[in-house]
Image 1 (cartoon, helix red, strand yellow):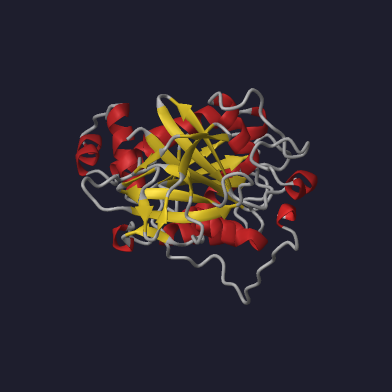
Image 2 (image 1 turned 90 degrees about the vertical axis):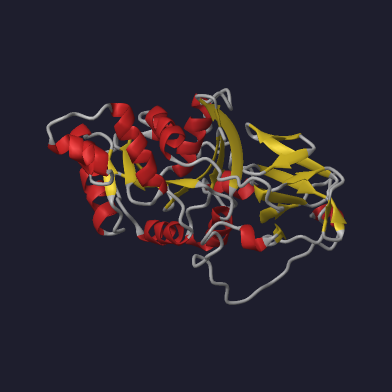
Length: 342
């Protein structure tokens, strides 16, 4: 499938929302890239996000690059909102972890990468802010290897890349040891297999605010991260990774479908789907159906909660809901006195 469901994760202030904005702009999803500092980021829609310049809730957007539809989930960086990140992982096939070239690997970076490993989600690293005073991408690369323990391969050194990839592929290694230079297509194909098998973690670099390195990052998303694995003839299986209110349509369940399909008027348990919408850029549009591998907003499931599995939970990918980021000490529910104040 020409689909990539990707999350963007980072320690706070590493620049992940700026990366998301630049990706949207390059793909034609928005006319101009928004700014976190100016409060114009397209994925920061809450008043508190725009006022404070931070992400509080995970936000999804959609765009296209080289004929591939990319659904991006921009997640909060603050540890206080780790539950938002954890729920987002349920929907992903791959991830971009943004690391600041100035600060390097930070505390939340370690927690995020550990959660991605448990969920068996392939990762690209993007070392951001290489244009800043004090930036050192080589130091950041070494921290990815040493602190995170990731078998990272840097994409700006062709010889190092070739050696790392050959170590994962017997045919390429044999040709390399005999003095042959493998064709780049063969190298990239072997790299994609290694990334999807969690054997290698490519590292790219740039400065998202200036657009540097973001096109190469998009190419890597399309070439290296996996499309959805869609089994044929399987029963319904999907995960609700977020629920949001809608003034006109009722509760919107954000669903990642792993197998089967959903359509308007279809019964799910004792409830019936009333409408289905999918992302186009930063907005949802009516579709009426959702296919395996897609992410969409499903209406009509009034009793549904984040974490609910629609259909057969046995069909979920291994480690998909492993958890480990957010461990609540207590639960509370807040309701408005008047429905209009929701």
